[in-house]
Length: 269
Image (cartoon, rainbow, N blue to C red; front, side, top):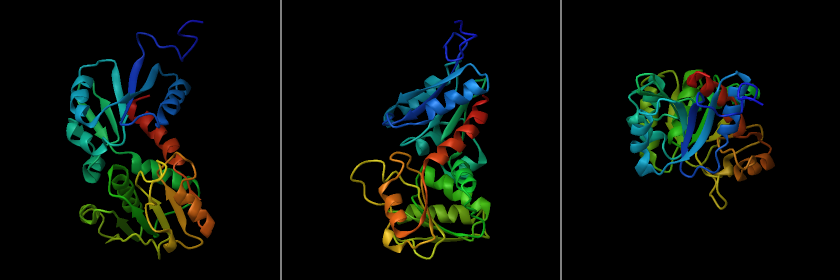
C-alpha cells in the first residue's frame, strides 16, 4: 500500500502538530485530531511532547524554525506561560490571559488562541444544558477555568460565581470580565455552590487518586447540573457524589470532542 492509499502513513510531506504538556501520558487529543485529519483528507499527524515548564520558551523558539510544524495544543501546566511566548494572540486569549492552541504562521510567528471555553460550552449545550440567564458556579481561575468563565459571560449568564483557593485570582478574573460583560453579575465564591443552577469544576482536581474535591458537595441539590473538565476518570469523585445527590452530571469528555473540531479548523486541517 502506498502513502497515497494509506492516509495514516507519514511521508516527507506530512505536516506535524503537537500537544505540549507536563506530564503528557494522560492526554487524549492526538487520536481525535489524527482521525479528523484523515476524515478531512489532510496529510497531518499530531504527536505528544513532554515539555518541562523551564524549557517551554526554548521549545517555542525552536518551533518558529521548524517549517513542517503547523501548530499544537498547549495544556497543563503551560497555558498561562504560553501567552507571553506567542508573537500574537486573539482578543479572547488576551482577555482570559491564557492560550491552549498555537499555530505557526508562514513567516514563523506563533499565533495563540483560547478554545477551552467555547469547546466546553458547545459540549454543555449539545447535552441540552442551556446557560443563558442561569446562575453558574465555577471552581478555578487557571487557564481552562478563565476561558470557561469568559465563554459563560459571553453567552449571557445571569450570574457567574468564581471560587478559587487563592481569592485574589478569582477577584482579578471577575474584575477583568466585568469590564467587558457589564450585564453579568460577577461574585467571588466560597467552597459552597448552593443557590446556583450549574456548578463546574474548572480545576485539575479529580485527575489524580487522592485529590480533594474541588468544592463542597453539601451545597449541591437535586436538579443542579454539575459539570467537569477532568476527562479521566470519566466519572470523577465529584460527579459520583453529585449523581448520588440527584444532580444531573456532565463529564469532561464532550469538551474535548467538540473542541477538537474547533482546533482542527484553527490548525487549517
